[in-house]
Image 1 (tube, helix red, strand yellow):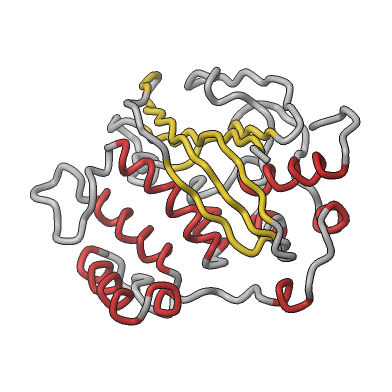
Image 2 (cartoon, rainbow, N blue to C red):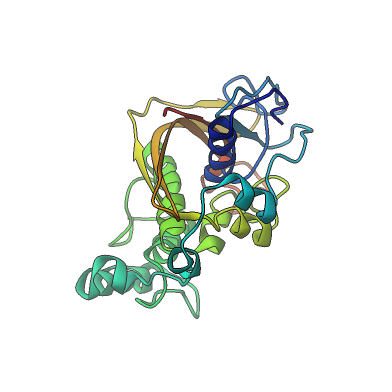
Length: 268
């Protein structure tokens, strides 16, 4: 945690950065190997989230987050309802996405419904296409190679799409089936209580690194967040997305890309 004396504005930046990175904790993903994690000091406005490193609890509770933020309008804070895919991108586009989802999903009751968020349908499409990886021709509607760095970047895009739709369950699961390190779903959701919207821009991708049975892909990002009171914050940094190689005994979920760690720094 940051223990140095900081101005109130710096404190807010740290709170926002922790929230955007999944309310997780220090550890430099660029310096870590597959089987260990090297932690480093966290500067004001910087957060890094590294799975596996023994770290302090870096996420604010709802009361302290509210105290560190600007006053919130009641209308903004009350808008916590799910944004449906139909409302998000329009009925026709949502119908097309739902049709693709139903076409590729092997689930008996897939979440391919325009009343759900676009992110959960995109997640189901990615999950389903990954299940058929290497087993014949790709199905209609499947996007990039599930092992590609573009598919890794899609996880980060899907994470922010889910946050914007207030679909915190889908966002939480982009970190894997157990969510971000040391974060329950309820606590993760509470971390976004004062966030109105977020937008991510993914930078240029370069091939990732492999080791000890896993592949790690760095995804550079720029993020703009809008608080409930309308104020803007901007961050730059990267996510590290990970998947397990196709080794004996690995599950389909393990072979899917998921967010492993994040490092974001406030830029203003």
